[in-house]
Image (tube, rainbow, N blue to C red; front, side, top):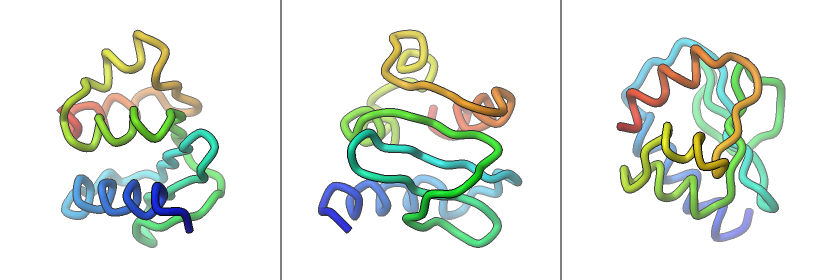
Length: 96
């Protein structure tokens, strides 16, 4: 695991550790790997998810720190969504 993936994993855990999103979500970080969030926990893994959020490391870091709005990231093209848009919108309220 790279240092960047370790940092991203810790940021996602900190943001989502007490949230029950009730779905499988994958954070696909360009050039680094993927973080899965589902009923089995939060871990570095690439697999099928109901919603996949695709961004670079800086964008994911800014989202987790609350420095970037998910809507703004999506509208500017820094964040792409594959799969369920309703799950992405649910996550948007958590990140805001």
